[in-house]
Structures are given as C-alpha cells and as structure tokens.
Amino acid sequence: MEKLVIEGGARLSGAVQISGAKNAALPILAATLLTEEKCVITNVPVLRDVQTMIKILRSLGVRVQMQDSRITVCPAEYEGHTAPYRLVSTMRASICVLGPLLAKQAFARVSLPGGCVIGPRPIDLHLKGLSGLGARIKVEHGYIVASGKKLRGGRIYLGGPFGSSVLATANVMMAATLTPGMTIIENAACEPEIVDLADFLVKMGARIRGQETPAIEIEGVKELHGAEHRIINDRIEAGTYILACAITAGEITVKGACIAHLGALIDKLRDAGVVIRNSGDTILVKAGRKLRPVDITTLPFPGFPTDLQAQTMALMCTADGISIITEKIYPERFMHISELNRMGARIMKEGASAIIKGAPELSGALVMASDLRASAGLVLAGLAASGKTDISRIYHLDRGYRQMEEKLSRLGAKIWREKE
Ligand code: EPZ
Image (cartoon, rainbow, N blue to C red; front, top):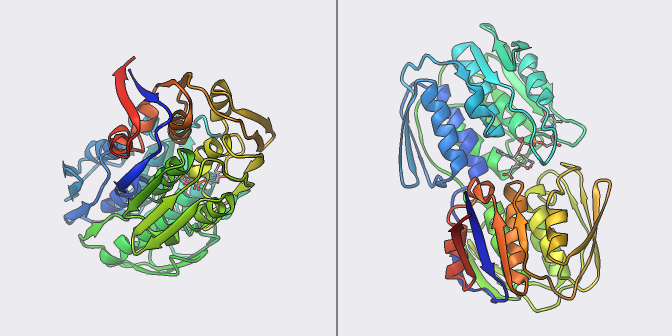
C-alpha cells in the first residue's frame, strides 16, 4: 500500500489544469451499451474507477481500448448481461449499467452495490424508476435481476428522502431512450454530469428535453447509433484545488473550470474572504491567512455539493471562528472528523451536522484515508498543517484524483508518495 507525505506550510501558487469529470465519464461509458456501433469518448480521467468501469464493459463482451484520456468502445453484438459482484463491490457507480442493459438486452443482472463509509447507499429509486418503465425487478442471491421485453414510457417521480438521485436519474434516462413512448422523470437530478450524459445520448440519436431541469422528457427511439463525445471537466476536482489554494493562503489559476458549476462553493468562499475572479474557463483564486467562518448545508445541484464537504471542513478548521456544516445528502459523511481532530482541529459531530471551532493552526500527524473525498480533505489539512503529515490508504484518493501529488507539487506544495 502507499501513503502520501506532506510537509505543510507552503503557500500554493501557479496554475493547475482540471481533468475530465469522473462522475460524468462513468455513466457515459455505461451508455455505450445502448448501441452496437463504435463510440469514442475523450477527456476521460485516467482513474481507478474508470478502469473498473472498463473491466465491467469487457466482462459483458464489449471491446474497449483506452489510450491516455481517449476511450474507444466497440459494443458490436455483445451478449453479456451480468455485472459481477467482484467488480460492482469495488465501485458503487457500476449500478449505472443496469438501465442500459435492461433497455438493450431486455435483461440485466447486476450485483447489489452495497454500502460504503459515507452511508447505506440504497438503490430503491433506481428500482422504482425502472419498474415505472414496466421492468420486472427481483433481488436474489445478492443480485438485482431486471427483465422486460415490453417496456413502456411513463411519468416517474424520482425524489427520495434526500432529494433527487444522480445515478437513478442516469439509469432511468438511459433506459428510457430505447423505451417506446414518452417518459417524464420528475424530481430528476440536475447535476452537470447528468446534462453531459444527456448531451452524449442526444448525439447517439436519443430524443431528450429538459436535462438541466428537474423534469426530463425522453421520447423512446428504436435504436441509437455510435457517437463521439468529450467529457466535461471535473467541478469537484476544480473545487478541491480552489480550496487547497484557500487553506494555504495562496494565489493560483485554475484552468478548465466551469464557473457555472461552482456557484455554491464560490459564494461561500467569497463570504469567507477569498478573492475569486474568472475569465472564460479560468478561475483566479487569492486568499489571506485568516478566513471568516461560514455555515454550509449540502444539497442537490445547484446547492452546495456534498463531494466538497470534507475539503471545505478542512478549510473551516483554520477559519477565525465557529462554522457549522450540515449534511443533507449523506448524514453520516463525517469519517474525516476524527482524522482532522488528530491534526489539532476542534470539530464536534451533532447528528447530521458538524460544529467546527477554528484552530490557531493544525499540526501534522499520521492519519488514515477512509473514502475518496475525506482523503482530499486530509490532504488539504496537511498542506496547511505545521510539520509532516502521513496519509495512509491513499488508494481511496486514486479513485477520483489523477496525479494529485504531481499537480500540487507543481503549485509549490511539498508532497510525495511513499510505500507504506
Ligand atoms: C452520485 O452518487 C455521485 N457519484 C456521488 O459522488 C455524489 O456524492 C452523489 O451523486 C450526490 O451528489 C457518481 O456520480 C458516480 P445519489 P449517487 O443517488 O448517484 C439517496 C464521489 O465522491 N438515495 O444522488 O449514488 C442516497 O442515499 C461520489 O465522487 C436513495 O435514497 O448518489 C443519498 O442520500 C460519492 N435511494 C441521496 O439519495 C436511491 O435509490 C443522493 O444519492 C438512491 C439514492
């Protein structure tokens, strides 16, 4: 196993280029199962989760080649319909092959994804949505078995106790593209990654409207053809580097960032006293030593993204006062609190909220990553801490961040990877 070692204290400066979005690439790769023609997907981030999705496509009999950030998928007449436990259990997002397989093969067998440290991760909305199209769904021996030769479009409400569901919206939207009739998804997710998926499906010949709104209309067509698509850049990666700049009182340029995807974060950081300007797809960030505390509530897009919660908590550990962070998406997504407290933070969990008292400074320590975004939060804390921080189990980080230590080193951070 590997660890990251960080010598804290350096103020970041320079420019960083944002890569393609993991959470757009995964459903878009799954969507290639809807056609028998070649698809070329570019600007794909080279990440562990993308490799896992490629393995799932190959296990279904689909030919996939990856060259740098370009993936060529040749579904041809693939026969497979089962996504195996050994792969799905390593990446929950594998669930998004369910909709395409059902629509294309009229049968799908996908392992139940299981939970993870950020929460139970139910899939009831996925199953409700596909049942709404007429699929017969049963769960047996740890697998979802979905079948339906005569799917019909319909009106499907996808709101759950925590709002909309990103991947349930993706699954139903993908299945509906080949389902005869009109499907209307109500309380659909509006995340940019859903819009990017819809854009790819439209290039394949799908008939979709309203993909930026909570009401998405899909008129089923007989078949979809191959297409070429460039994945949007990763708003969570961009937000992570903006926060890294802020926590080190640095001044950086973030290239390839879409300001429209980061409204909630930028609004809060400006309240905290960070200077943020943008021109085109470049965001300029400048921060002083002591920031003001802010209160955050995570919500579905365009609300504050839960995937930036841990990184923002790290920043608030160094703010000049008390902040409150409330998780409305994953109420248990606080594994990073105990690790940040080992670094001198003063955080108390109260139900689905965390109360953070800004500390004069954080101190380097041995800490352990627990999930993808918590790992990123620990890296940011290490950048600001005095002394050395060792972060173990950074395979979590590699799932969603390509070459993070290289990008941070180029910004002046003292960070390197070592064998544990
Ligand atoms: C996507 O996960 C992202 N993953 C997550 O990013 C992100 O945190 C999440 O959306 C919320 O924005 C990918 O896109 C691959 P949800 P997803 O279904 O679609 C509840 C990262 O770090 N829910 O929108 O699985 C669920 O428990 C990852 O990159 C149900 O109740 O999340 C949660 O509370 C982590 N029933 C809320 O909805 C369901 O059937 C939102 O979950 C499905 C979800």
